[in-house]
Image (cartoon, rainbow, N blue to C red; front, top):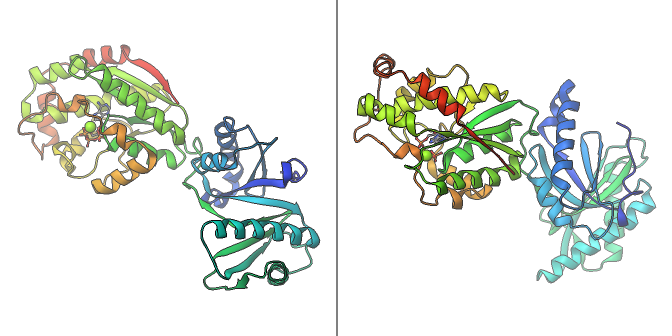
Length: 407
Ligand code: ATP
Ligand code: MG
C-alpha cells in the first residue's frame, strides 16, 4: 500500500501509532491478516470519533479527523483489538532533521512537564532511541540519537543523559514521515478476529467458559456461543447473566451470537432414564451433540469449553474422553492445564469475573449426582445412554433455540 501522509490529515500532527506483532511474520498471508486488523480497528474506533486509519509497512496509524479527539480512549480501545501489540501517542513530522529536532523538543518538553507534575524533582534522566526505517535518510540511527540528545540537553537544563536507568526514553522513528514519542502502552496481542475461522463456545454462567472463549478469540477466531437453559430449574436471570457475559466479551471478541437452547426436557429425560452416577457425562455428551449441530449451522470448525483437568468429576481425562466421543468436530479446552487462580486473574482482567460470580444456578448443577463416576468407560456410558432415545428431544431443543446478538 502506498504511504499516505499522516501529517497532512492529523490535527496538530498528533496521531496514535499502532504496532502489530505476530501478524507481521505471516508471509504471504500477511495482507489478509492486516486487512482483518484494519477492519476490526475501524469498527471498534467508530465510537471514538471515527478517526482515519492509515496503514503502511505493517504499521497502523490512528489519525483523528478533527479535534477534540479522545486520544486516551482511542488507545484503550485499540489496545483491546486482538493483533495489536502496543500503542503510542506520537507527534508526526516530515523526515527532515530540522523538523525532527523541533518535534523532539516539544515531545520531551511535554514529558518533562508530566514527570514534574507527577512529583519528580531534581535532574531528570533520559536517553534517545532512534529507528531509521527510511534508509534514504542520510544520518544513521546513532547519529540521530546523539544529535537529538544534544539539542534536548541544550534546551532543558534539568535533563541529564542516563542510558541505563532513564526516567524517560525519547523514541524517534524515521520512516516516510517521522514519529516522536515517549510512551509505549502494551496491548493484548494475539491475532485479528476473523483471521482464523470460527468456533462455537459452550458458554455457561461460570468463571471459566468466558475466559476460554476470550483465549480462543485472541488467536483470531470468531466466536459464537451456545447456552443450555433449563427453565424453570434455572431462572430468567441466569439467562440474562449469560447474555451480559457475552456482551462484556464482545469488547474483545466483536459481536457474539448467543444461542440459548431450551434444555429442560433433555435433562429430565437423562435424570429419569439413566443411572445417576453417569448422568453428568451423559448430559455433557448430549450438550456436545446439540452444540455441534448448531456449530455446523453457523460455519464453525470447532467447539470450545472451559474445562480443565480434575476441576470437577466431569473433567477427569476419562470423562472428557467420553464427552469428546460424542462430538464429530474438535473440542478445544484452552484452560485444560490452568489453575483456577490463573483463570480468575484473566476473568478479572477482561471484566467478566463480577458477573460470573453472581449467584444464579447453572443447569449443570441442577441434577448433580451425589456420587458421579470419575472414571467412566466409554462402553458403559454408551450402553447407558442407549436406554433412551434422546435424538427426538435433542432435535426439539435445537429447533426451540432462541438467538440473541450481544455486543
Ligand atoms: P464454568 O465456570 O465455565 O461454568 P465449570 O467449572 O462450572 O465451568 P462445568 O459446569 O462442569 O464447569 O462446565 C464445564 C464446561 O461446560 C463449561 O466451561 C462450559 O464450557 C460448558 N457448560 C457448562 N454448563 C453449560 C451451559 N449451561 N451452557 C453451555 N455450556 C455449558
Ligand atoms: Mg458452570
